[in-house]
Image (tube, rainbow, N blue to C red; front, top):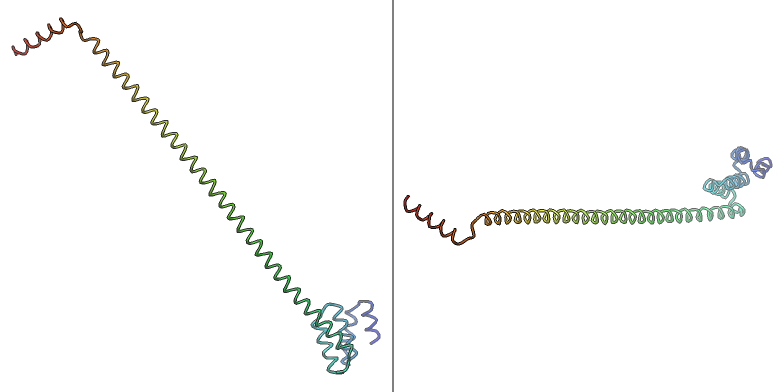
Length: 178
């Protein structure tokens, strides 16, 4: 047993475990529990202390160490639960942030799309207004051209009343003969 104790002191737990696992007396099981505890194999250490206490129920060092390791395990479980909760909270926060970012991106895209749609509508309105102005301009030019033609035709008509009456009389005379 002194060899196993020396190995534990030198932190050569593998060699200590080889020696201690062969012995089933309370002291060897206690030392084996200590070796396992130092390796952070807490559940195995508790089992070794329990076996030592079965062999020697009044073994106070085994009882104290078992209680210490049980407390460590409880704290570790609590810490693990807290870590899991923290991780879940962080994940939830990240998910919420991601959802918010996605919503913000969608909102920005929607706003851009709306702006683009408004710009497109304005462009179409401008084009439509330009087309209307162009049509109105063409209609006005056509009207002006028609007036010019009418005025040219009217200028060709004799505006002398004497000539007008003469032509009218000739026309009526021609009508009667035919």
